[in-house]
Amino acid sequence: MKRIFVSLMILILVIGCQQAAEKPVDVEAEKAVIKAVLKAQLDAIKAHSYEGEAAVWAHTPYIVRKKVKGWDRVSDYYRSLFEKAKKDPNNYQFYEATLIGADIYVNGNFASAFTTEHAEFIWEGEKVSNNRKPHKNLEKINGEWKIITLF
Image 1 (cartoon, rainbow, N blue to C red):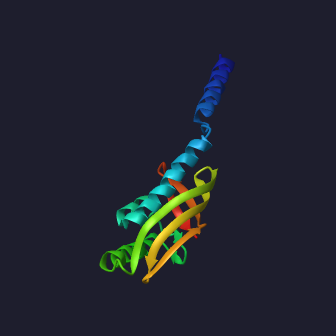
Image 2 (cartoon, rainbow, N blue to C red):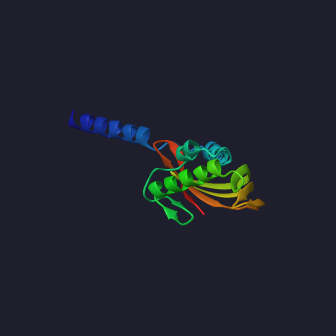
Image 3 (cartoon, helix red, strand yellow):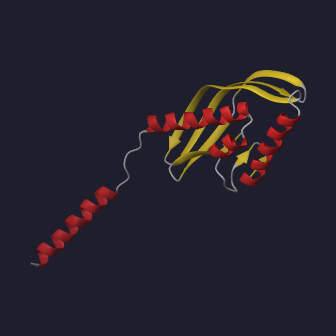
């Protein structure tokens, strides 16, 4: 009787561990979601939308946007940038920001995206049109991909 009980407990434990095992990740589906986040970030720039930027960035102290570290400072950067564009559209204006391509690497809750973007904007009164290649890292937080670095 003791052997049957122990065997039954081991069987229940094995079945429970198998069910608790991590489900395989659909990497292509994750890449599609990440690409949508990258596009949403560019749409926010083009629309001068602070809310759009806030939706795609992680609100943590460890995020980095070029030389700015932490959500509080990144948040201030976008508020200031969009306020400048609103007050002085002849000197600061984003009118095109398009994702041309992205090489995305996913590893669990971390992703790295090497992107190619086309941008057209006015910066300090000068019209600029270029293709740039920023590198962005993302983290999956509470089931949502959020940008944690932009270089």
